Image 1 (cartoon, rainbow, N blue to C red):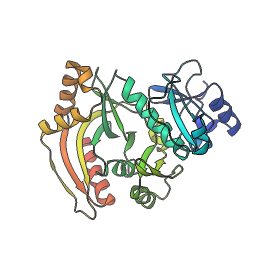
Image 2 (cartoon, rainbow, N blue to C red; image 1 turned 90 degrees about the vertical axis):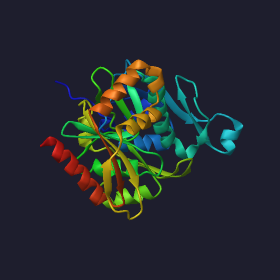
Image 3 (cartoon, rainbow, N blue to C red; image 1 turned 135 degrees about the vertical axis):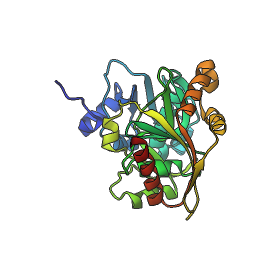
Image 4 (cartoon, one colour; image 1 turned 30 degrees about the vertical axis):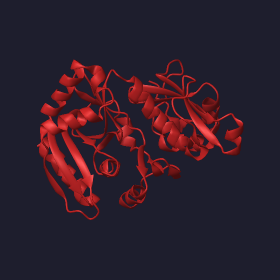
Length: 308
């Protein structure tokens, strides 16, 4: 039986050849992205951050995407890059230094705009013992920082940005892609997980200073495993805050998740019933934290109690 080829198995020459010609077919969960680019930052970050990610078939891809330098006089004076999906650019060019971030943002855009076979919520989602914790959060809530700490503390990464829920059985569909961190969160996770692998730091983006964290090998290996929603936790970080947790009204949780869903209205009755099912089978909790060791210990107790 042949072994699945991963991005990290390719030589630099093979990687470059595919990126610059037919496209590199990267399989993330159930989706295949055929990626084309000649940008050096993408050539260096893909084999680092997607090293464990399997390659898809060269015969089929859900999305054909490209990140390339803007071909205009302005683009040469002030280098910019553009993201294309099926040769169409859905948003404005950005500085060339942001090429890998643009690739990640563009992949998120593709999923959010086309994967309507799932209910899609803007939230991180992690799994342990078969149960998933959905972590919605506004900017500054510490959602991604908490997610990054937990996936190095016994939890499996499903996604740090997009929670995909299958309407057929309300299960969580994993993606296991790099975790996007910004500003002080980068140093926080570097200190909390010294062995963590980061991609290039990109200063002065529209989201601040950004770097991407490589997903754990174990999370990528288990990407095909579904998880059952068990908790909806609304995190809120506060500098040196004492840990506080409590019940969060399910009616409020329903409204907040619906507001954070990309396609709740589009799915109509299916979306309403599916979201209600997720709320009914999950504990809804508020969670305030200021220190990652306390926060990860609290989540681990939560999972252990559910398992027992």
